[in-house]
Length: 114
Image (cartoon, rainbow, N blue to C red; front, side, top):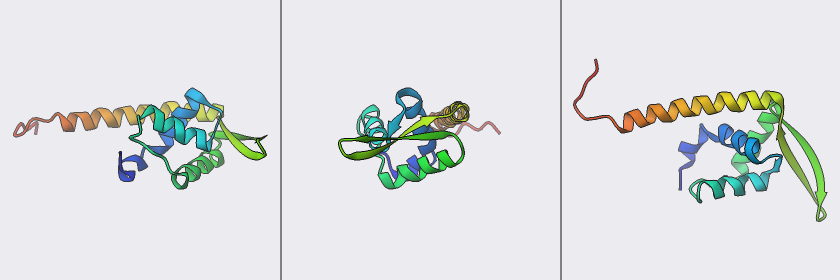
């Protein structure tokens, strides 16, 4: 399982990407989808997920719709046009970061570029 420390900086991007591909989704569905896609290596807690969802909504990246299902109120999150732009930006940043990490991982000892 991936540590919360590693996950923290990527959580917004993960949530945005999941909603882009599968949304609109409610919180529990987002956590299940992340776990499914990562084969159980990333398990989002509601304590980590909901602050991100609320912040993205406050920033105008998400909108909500409420639905009553099986006597339970579900809040579904969907991307706004601003959310789609933010998703593209965050995915680019994450890809650049992953590429940079891969360069560090593949470094050969003793070879200096300075």
